[in-house]
Figure (cartoon, rainbow, N blue to C red):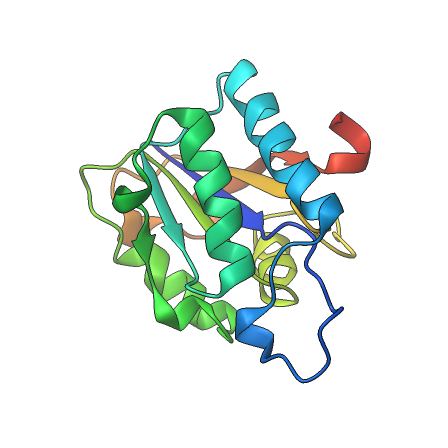
Length: 164
């Protein structure tokens, strides 16, 4: 069995005109929400054994907050450049390539893609995975490349406004 967590990066700042989208940092709300969501997951026993992140500053910073809370060294966060500006097919490919030594992987990335991917595994429509929202997908698959809609479902949708 595999468990996949999709984590949309925490709230980012738009306060610096001309800054590249890739370089945008977290704003105050994001800096507050990321450690609180990580702590909520830890207290709930929802802890991954692998962290994979977009290298965009806001996603990687969010991943570092989660790593710190889970006692995972920042250097162990796997950066995947193709998460940034990915479409759902790209994310599904990244999932299929995760190492089999991991049974619970957490991927940090961006919308609208994460909402689109989440909806592949849900009977209900998720309008929007909010910033720092976490989608937990449980799968009967034994291998990451076997995870698909037919053997995997959303087990939890954890959004900051609802759990913090």
